[in-house]
Length: 388
Image 1 (tube, rainbow, N blue to C red):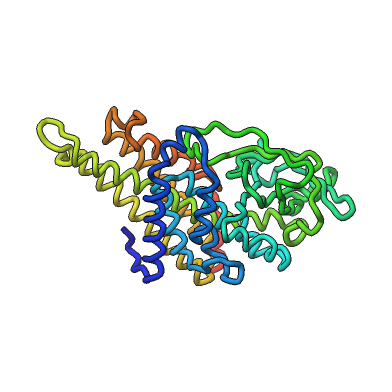
Image 2 (image 1 turned 180 degrees about the horizontal axis):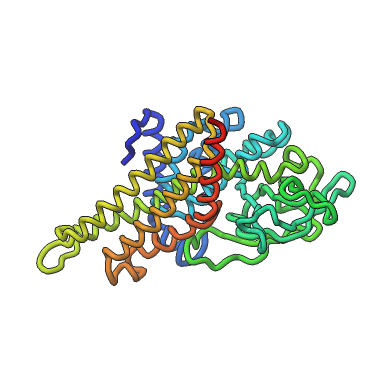
C-alpha cells in the first residue's frame, strides 16, 4: 500500500509487474533458490515486457518511465523473488544508466537497444577481493597498447557476471608509480567475447541464491580503445553517481522482501491457533505486525518522495542513502519478526519466511553497507549546512 497517489500509468505498470511475478516467478522461486540457478529465459521475458528498459528513452527502445513507476515494478518483482529483482535493479540502474549518461552516441546506439529489450544483460564490476567499501583502493590495471587497453586483475561480487553480455568494469589507468587515487580509475565496456575474459568462482551464498554472483578474472583482457566509457580517469565518479540511482533500486528490493514477509506473517497469524484462538488475537503478535507494517510504509514513503525529487532533477545523494539504509534495515527487522511469528515453522524450508530472512540480509551490505550509508548521510548533512 502506497501513500503516494499513483497515476494511471503507474498503476498499470504495477499491475503488469504483479501479474507477471505471480504467474511466471512465484511458482518457480523456491526451486531456483534450492538449485541456486536462474534461467536466463526469465530475464529475456522481462525484457520483452519492458522491465529491463524502464528508465531508458524511447529512442533506445526503452519505456522512458518515471522513477516511481520503475520502483513500483521492482517492488512487485522483489516480493516474488529477490534474486530476480536484483538482476532487474542492477541492469536498470547501473550499466544502462552509465551508458546513457556517460557513453558516446556510438556506444549508446550499439548497446542500449538490445539491453532495453533484454537481448543483452548488463552487469557492474567495481569491487575486488581487497577493495569493497574502499572501492578506490582497487588494483585491476589497464595499460594502453596501441588501439586497445590490456586489463589485468580480478573483480568480485559481480551480479549476473556469469551470463552478462555487457559489463561496466572499473580499472586503474594511472601507473603504479604515480597513483592518483579515485582520479586514476576509468570505466570500460567489457563483453565476454573479448580475449582474456574469464568467469571465476561462483559464490555459494546464504541468500539470493538464484542470482549468480561471481568473480571475473582478466588476464591481459584486450579491450578496444573505443570501449573506454567517457573520459579517462572519470570512471570512479561515474560509478559513484550511478550507485546513487542503484541504492533506490536496492531500497525497493528490500521493501518487496519485507512486504512478502509481512503478508506471509499476516496469513499465518490468522490461521495458526494456540490456546484455542488464532495467534493474531494475541497482543504480542498484533504489536509485531503493527511495527512491521509501519516500518514498511515509512520506508516506502521516503523512497517514493526521493524518487519524485530525482525526477525533478534534484540531488538525491543523501536521501538515496537514507532510503537504502531505512529500507534494508526494515527488511532485516521485518523478516526477523516474521520468523519469530512462525516460531519453529519459521526456521524450516517448508515455509517461505526463512528465504525472505536469508534474502534480506544482503540488502544491508551490497551497493554500500549500512555503515557506508551513514557516512554518506553525515557527510551530506555537513555539506548542506555549508551551502546555506
